[in-house]
Length: 242
Image (cartoon, rainbow, N blue to C red; front, side, top):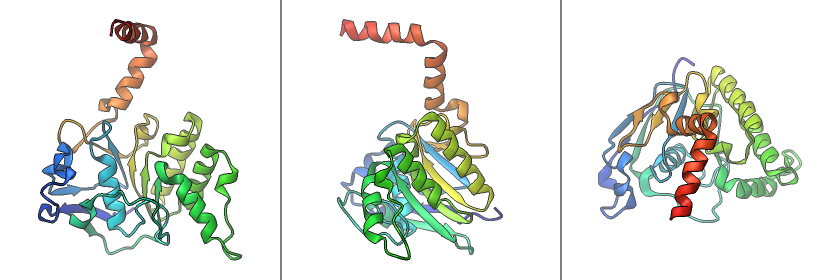
């Protein structure tokens, strides 16, 4: 990919309410500019660190429905997105993506239901609800990932087995080689290992580049696999004392 669709994002904090909870999120409250350098950008961090808030705002600023889907999806079951998107100004390249999709694990059911509502004779439903949750989720992702696309994936591993996560990793990697750009929020040590991705950590009070082996997801999983018995013994004995 010669040029990224999204190069950077600027945040105008004058457009955010003084009492907004956004100002309490350490990683983003002092952020004025965030620059992207790779076709695949992965956001990682502890729960509540702001990574999904950032991904959601980016997706909405690019014209996607807050609950997910393609740019053709326009529905709302619960309005929960933040005002961050209204304070964003995105720097884009001259080339435009040919397709795009916002995939959210938490609203997959709603999107799959709406896909049935939107279906017609020329665009038959893929009937995601007739598959298992994991199969439907992966099938939807595979149907939507195309060359020269712009994609936002929020915790796509939530419904997938480790084997299916590897399948999704290969799909993302190949799609990025064919000119697509991805923004991904994940806790998965598997998806974090996508070759060539830039990992941005939202931990420690700021957004910063992080190596794969430095992520907490990798370190905790490595510690558990290599020291399972000792770790469980210590954790469970502490639980009994409490």
